[in-house]
Image 1 (tube, rainbow, N blue to C red):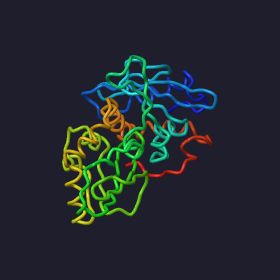
Image 2: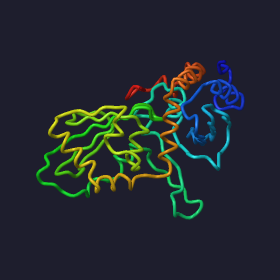
Image 3: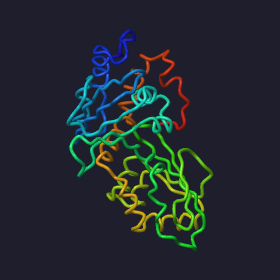
Image 4: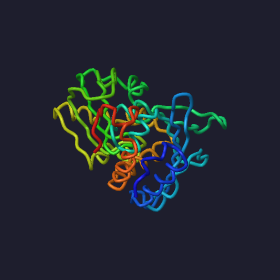
Length: 278
């Protein structure tokens, strides 16, 4: 089934057709449920809609809020269309996305708007106060995460004397390059996996001496503790959403959705793709 080309974006007819298209797709969360609310920023306002997944299928996709959802994402319209269609995903989509949530212990109704991982590792100084080790030379580390809701995204950071002194989004000439799945990277940050376990489905390489030094710093308790401090309740649902949207089943859905947006200047076809989706 295809989404009717004549259905205006985000109308009830569009959601009904999109839900019917997506309902046939198998997604990799067989034993889990996932509810996601999206807030899409438009000129002069915003549109809110939500998806529910259960038993390896999308079971609802409707306009409106989802008060009991697992995750709330706020995005620009171009970023959101890229996320749904998987066209033009990458670092630009990551930059134009935010997670909205209430953190544990905060008063009811207090909603924070936070950068999604791994953008938070660039915008938050998590490693500047790590213990100084004067014998450690400067090391530049490239991190590549595949299978995220935003596509394949890349960040980097530079260590001097074992402290993070600079970081950014994108690709650089690095001494150490670590590639892993988004879900595994978030599980490592949250303490569910160690560094090497998180790279089982990825790879790590670079200068052997610097790589060994980096792993020693990264797997040391002060660094693990600093990274865990970035964790929020959004980590697991973000990881699940990444597995869904990067799955072969959703790739077919994305093709059908993209066919409804052939000439949109603000859509994913008009974007520069920073990182290809993998």
